[in-house]
Image (cartoon, rainbow, N blue to C red; front, side):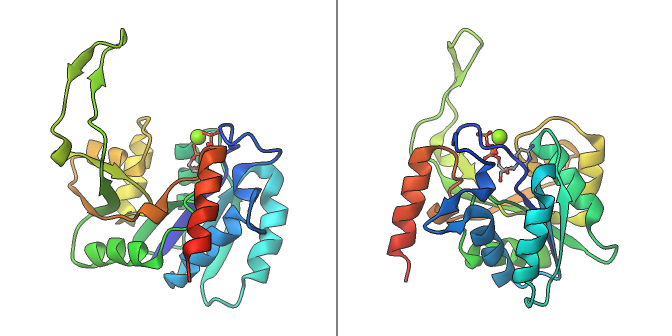
Length: 223
Ligand code: CTP
Ligand code: MG
């Protein structure tokens, strides 16, 4: 199993003085915390995708994480998240059958989430992603803000990463190249079934300064 960790975003909404993955959360960068979580899932291979300006710094970091038994490489990402995922996929070794794509920004994701995604792939699905029930009622609106639809809340899931796929299917989905906010949508567009497995509230995506505070609090609650 290979993991593509996407960390090449600029973190506009966080508004720090550096790309989000390089911001510290209680003394350790978001990227390093993510990578430690990923390595706990014992992948054969990890590709870390970072801004072009941070390739050298990240190469030094992964050397220091080195004795994990996983092959770790670092590549530069692109303008959009999908470009960064594509850059990571291109770097994976030939023999990799399953790939998990993970947002570095979800740096507190428990290893059990990786394991549930992987277990679903091993059981034969083409794609599996973690999700949690939504608490709010979600509305679909038109460009004028008028509600056009109210989906049944019980049918909705807020989805997270790691999102896992058959490697060839995900590569084909990226080559087909529509715009999407997650990888599952690209695979769905090809007509494949993607299973939602149980996510975890700790897999939150650090997006705003408030999320950083939430993540700090979660960290203080961990053993
Ligand atoms: N990402 C990436 N390459 C991009 C954009 C995003 O690798 N061109 C990664 C981010 O580093 C992050 C994940 O995709 O780990 C989810 O994206 P998001 O939370 O939106 O991060 P940013 O794009 O950095 O934040 P913002 O949208 O606030 O600028
Ligand atoms: Mg973004």
